[in-house]
Image (cartoon, rainbow, N blue to C red; front, side):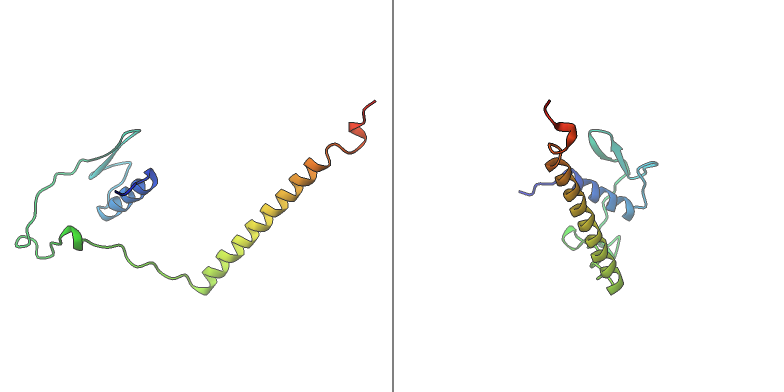
Length: 112
């Protein structure tokens, strides 16, 4: 019942490639098939808990590490960047408004 977008799938493949030390340019584990999807190209064998003491079930598989909280300086940079982006966007919108609202005023638009 879960809808997976292409972005989520690409992100998951990227994370798997990191885990397996694989690359898209020279794949050893996951091959990208353009405009189709991905294919597992590594050979797979089943492992049991007796053969591999660190064997984990899918439910207990390695979870991604907890997200690191940004430092105060990183947070300040993020907020400063957002403020600058917002200011620039507002300035552009004001310029567009002025250009559009004044285009029918002036000597170049007089009906003779």
